Amino acid sequence: MEEQVRKTIEVIRPAIQADNGDIFLKSVDEASGVVTVELTGACVSCPASTVTLKAGVERILKDRVPGVTSVEQFGAEPVETESAVSL
Image 1 (cartoon, rainbow, N blue to C red):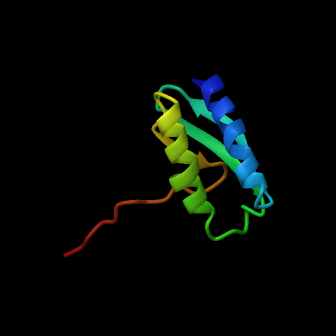
Image 2 (image 1 turned 45 degrees about the vertical axis):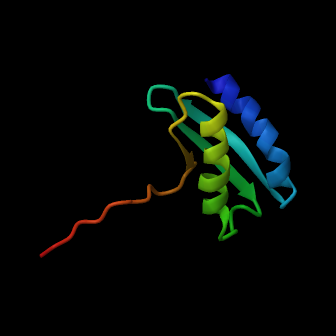
């Protein structure tokens, strides 16, 4: 799976580089399907980088590489998707 992820990221890179950013593969956890990447350059301060990561990179990797379940940003704090409700 890692080689397929690496090749797919190489296909994605020119689009990200066109916006003065870049993307690097950090790790692939084949057991969980989680791919960790690092966005650099203009992507670091871009408010749309989360959209690029989830709606762009993650969607493409899930479509093209069997077993990919999510894509995470290297060094980012995990985002809590559920919140506790107190009554």
